[in-house]
Amino acid sequence: MIATQHSEAKQINPLARFVTKEAVAKVLKVQPEQIREIRLWPYIIHVVGVGLSKFVSYADMPPILGVEPPTLQDCTRWWKRWRKTQQQAPAFWVEFYEGKFRQCRGVEELFNWGKLVGKIKHGLSGFQVDWLRKSYVVVKQCMEAQV
Image: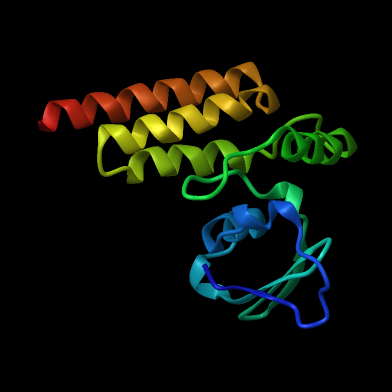
């Protein structure tokens, strides 16, 4: 991650822990290599890159492993954002988590990603949850077949 806190920022958003270059690239529909800098401001993320200067909401960032898991307050922030748009998580979240499943190096890591998705599945449609379950099973079967 190449996130930096803006020098004028007095506080940082609690959802900032979920900001990754990969997630920002998915939101903006660009390649991660195009992103030069991610500036974390109190209420918004400023992304600077090759031919690119965009603002992204913290509430568009999907939760990730390796940081504090999502809390009820985080879910409330997401719900507020989703209420203004499509009433559920952005569609790219499914693609993001499917990619994370495929990048797993072991069954334990896959299990942890699956557990995390289980915590936020309320924000996904039934079809999206089924899709992610099928992807999880396929990846798990491939891992078990290699052992």
